[in-house]
Length: 223
Ligand code: DC
Image (cartoon, rainbow, N blue to C red):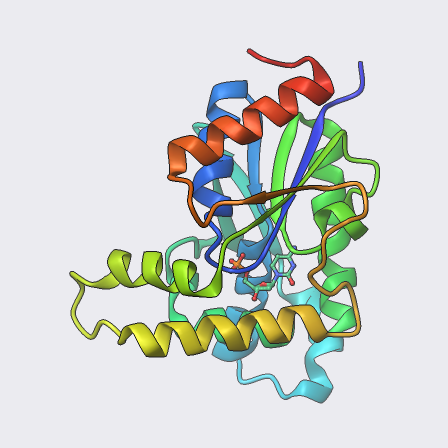
């Protein structure tokens, strides 16, 4: 039987990964966070000080892979697990920049498609429904207002030392949205056949339930 593929796209901070994790646990699907792949390429480029003109030819040396340990995704650069070190604001911004490079997108395309071919997946990113899995069984475009996304991020970071201000977080989100939506290759946009879910006024549980409802309606899959 063909595997079920669910695509979830949307801007930074809409809650894609938290919600997709909750939904995949409920359905017994593998959750694939494709942003981690772009972040890992950004880390590779940053750590090795690779100039823009050399990025394309250096990609085969990057050796980026995803492994699923106890059902949870970890991302590797060679043998090194970089799942945690790719989560800094610097790497977020660098990933947004490097993900606009067509050679980077082409390099990561097969990795993403082959995981979806051999597993039931919920895959989140920016171009999953439009480019990577255009035949996905269900496509969701998950969004929330920029102010609400900044607010959530601020609350998450508020306890940590060197927490950026709300305004800095909001400016970062607006800048990343602009970069992700205006690049030439595979920009962030809602696929024509995607269902829009706006989580501005929904909590995590409410958002996950709404997505499970949509998936159940479209696939009959309601484990
Ligand atoms: O989802 P995230 O914030 O971890 O993604 C980091 C960056 O990677 C984001 O700014 C855009 C890019 N990205 C992309 O271009 N395509 C994807 N499928 C996933 C992420």
